[in-house]
Image (cartoon, rainbow, N blue to C red; front, side, top):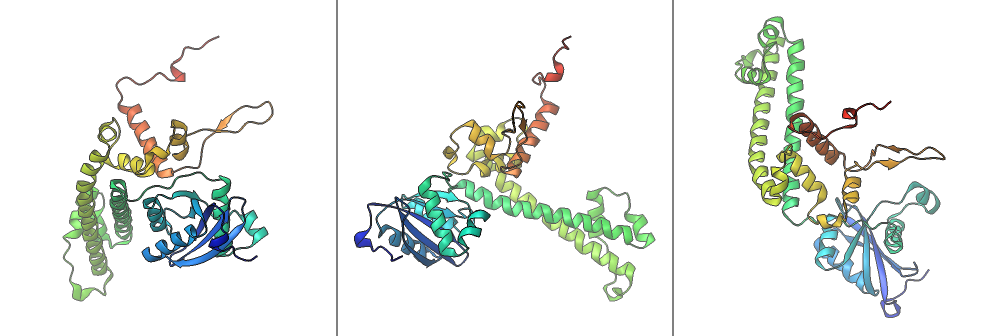
Length: 325
């Protein structure tokens, strides 16, 4: 099929982009789905600008469907938003489509454009140019430090299990804080590292000092996160049962442009707390929602547990109702 030139382009067009680490493949279709052209651009600021100019050269750009707006397509989505272009977040083509049409970057870009044209996806991607993006970055670093500290603690306990009897007896039964402090102050003879007892002490000291360093990193990050969360949403940060970590996760899930969540149902669906209908025939029932943002789901779960435990006046439940004969 010959490419339609900008001189014969229709009034309105829709774009689609298949994003990758180094390159983005773009496609443009008209309002009836005819492919006007495909082109590849570098995944750089200059490439994003050239991609947008190329799309606009085919006509009035109505919207652009972009894959991976939270990953490889984040930079492009940011530039398109700054230029006033409506961006639609699209998923990668499903397996049925790929089996029937094949797989290539131009095919995926065309599919993204047609998906945006048909309105099959109407999700607005998160904006990544404000305080919540800063919050997300800090939370990534904190989560990594917490996970590494937990791994380090498990490794210390595993080494103690297999350590020589004298060392194991000395360390067994200590609380975590005391255990870390004791291991960090071990003073083995490095010249005798070939013996199991000395090597165990060297390993435990190294792991304990790593644990202390990670704890210090977490403390430093918490000192940055707490005022940032309170500044973004003071009411959420002050809510009963909502700590800095929980509030931060809920804010990151909602995003900078939280107005894209048009109602409570959209909020519930995004967090995987909206029950899904599972009815058939005469059976009417619902099932748990296993989709959505599971980290946000876990954050809400922590809030519920805290309020059930500490709320002085809990709401009545079904178990509180009197039995009816």
